[in-house]
Structures are given as C-alpha cells and as structure tokens.
Length: 281
Length: 195
Image (cartoon, rainbow over all chains, first blue to last red; front, side, top):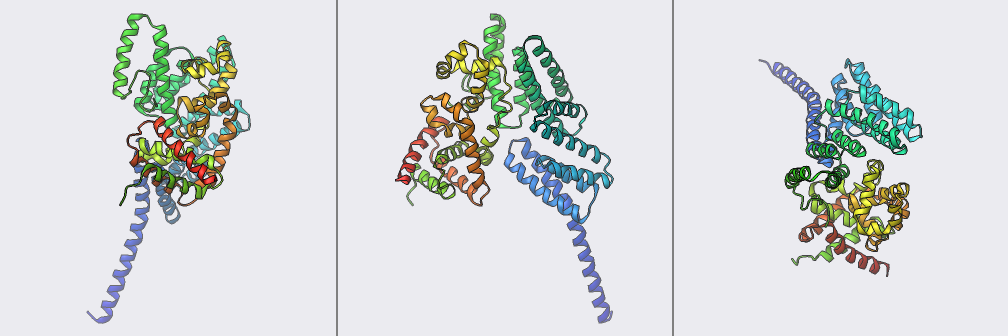
C-alpha cells in the first residue's frame, strides 16, 4: 500500500467517523428527549413537581434540537406533548400541526382540542361563561388527550357548581344531577385518575350523599391528586363527611363506619380522627 | 468552628432577603417562614411549596364548596364562630362564602405563606380584617415577589437559608411552633434594621 493510499484510507475513516458521530447525535437527541420525558412523568407521578418540570424542560431542549436537525412526526409529537405538560398551549398546538404535516394522523385533532381549550379559557376570562361551558362539555366528551380532558373537567365542574349554587331547590338538584352524571362517566372511563374521584366526592357532598362522598374522597386520596391544595381540601372533605355521618347515621351503622374510618386514618398516620397529618395542632 | 444558633441563621436569612427586597420588610417573615415550614416537611419539594401560594391564592376549588361545608367551617372553630355569630345565626351564606374565600386557605388549608402574611391578624383573631385586606395584600405580595422571583440566586439562596434553619430546628415540628419562633426573631431583626 502506497503512502497516498494510506492517506486516502485515513480520510475515508475520518469521514465515516464524522458520519457516525452525526448520526449518533441525531438519534441521541430523540432518545434523550424520550428519556427525560419518561423521567419527568415518573417525577410527576410521585409529586416531585419541581424535578418533573426540570426534566420536561431538558426533554424539550432535546426535542427542539431533534425537530430542527431532523424534523419528523415523532419529534414534533414528542415536542407537543412536552409543551402540553409545561402548559405551553400555543406551542403545543403548533407542534401537533407540524407532526400532522409529517404524517402523524392524530396531530391535527390534538391541535384542535388544544385550540378549543385555549378558546374556552379566553371566553371564560372575558365573561362569556356559557359559551366556554359548552366547549368544555364538548372537550370532556371528545378529547382523547388526557391533560385536556382533565383540565376541561376541572373548569366545567367549577362553572357547573357555581351555576348550581346560584339556584335553589329543584333547579339546583337538576344541575347537580347533570354534573354528577358527567363526573361518574369520567371516573368510569379513567378509574385511576384521582382528580375525577375528587370531583365526584365534591358533587356528592353538595347533594348530601356523605357516605358516597367519603368513599370517593378516599379513592382520590389513594390514587393521588394534582396539587397539595387539592390534597388538603380532599382531607378536610373526608373529615367533613365523618362529622356529617356522625350526625346522621343510626348508632349501629355509625359504629361500623367508625371502625372503617379508624382503619383508614391509621393507614394515613393521622394523629386524630379529625386531624390530617399535615395539620398543625 | 462554633455552631450557629437559630437566631444567627435567621439574621442571615433576613439579610439575604433584604438584598432582594430592601423595602418590602412585610415579606421577610412570610417568605422565611414558608421556606422553613416546607424545608422541614418536604425537603425535596421546597421550591414548589414556597411559591405554592401563587396557586393557592386562586380560590377555584375553594369557591364552589357546599353551603353546609362552609357553615361547618365557621361553626367548628370557636373563634371564627364568635366572630361571625350573626351571619351563622342568619345563615347569611353570601357573607360567609365571601369570608370563606379568604379564611379557608389560611385556617383550613393552612397555606404557610398566607398564614405568615396575616400572622398578626391571626394572633389577634381579627378575622374580618383579614377578609377586608386579603385581596389587596396578596396581590401586592405577588407583585413584589414576582419582581425578584426570577432573579439569579434568589431561590437558591432562600433554599440554603431554609435548609440551614431546618437543620437547627428539628424540634420545631409543627407549623405553629416554627412560626412563633421565627416571628419573634424576625420582628426584632426588622425593628433593628429600621432603627
């Protein structure tokens, strides 16, 4: 082999090496984005919100690099999902539309749901509650994007309960029954979502169904809730149901309920029947 | 090296917060108190919890509680019951619900920041004053903290102060004891600073 051949071989090797590094970096952006995304979801599930947000942000950086270097349906879909978790609605909508243009069939539908949710929120802020209400109802029924369904349910229940509170007697009952049907449906469709059980418990409490409200609140607590505020409110709801049942239940039923209640509060390490573990004394 | 006392750590904490919020002395106690409460209780989630008041001040799950729940909230707290006797007797749910929006996050959900922000009123049991001033004072606090919240070093510095305080106050395991101990020291510090 001549000296020139050696030089040429080294050049070819070098070019191959560059190509491999380039390809590896392309693959690793997408892989890193996925890894950080999974990590963020794990943190989120265990209420480590701060860490979850940091991981989502890292994941977004990688997804953005991937989308810039090698735009694809997968890169934009992942980018959109991350943006959704970071509440960056407009960006998420654009990403899903971009994913659709690269062949991700559901992209357009997802973008539409986000767009509708954004519209409903704006309408609500501008005082057009009934229009917003209709959109939330539509999204609860149609959206297959869980964050959008949960947020729509939250907003819908909030408006529906406010409406019910402005009414009296049978009209209030009618509005509450309508809301109950929707919340029951949501709980059935997504049994593992603690927040739906929380909503369910709240509506039942408005109807004076304290035993069932207690059971739903227990399920919400066991499955997990999205924020400390809601978690604490749910605990206080449990205590409220306990107090109401004490007033209402016949003695035999009360004794049986009390035994059950005692078991739960031991499980949660409450220091007292009416004092959740976070409460000051 | 001589170990610092809790007073010295709090003094350092006040000095630190004063660098960022020189004029907003009213925020020293709520910020340090909330940071310490969460540093003790939930070390890993301290940042979110310190600033959780931003979310908690939004009363969305609070404003749609049932009438009976609101009545029960006022009735079972003796001081509140005394303060709102007439409204409870008259079942004036409009007034009670309005007061509930401000008082429930503090007395029910026990938001550490809000309960420190209204510490003096709570000690004096001036609940109506809290209701009257809640919106304005919370909005002002949000405005002042948002101005420094994103500045480099603020959050990290607050975290260090809170961790140091937490390491020296392992016996203060309840929010009440934490707040009482801190309130006195910070009050003294602010008075000295003003002098």
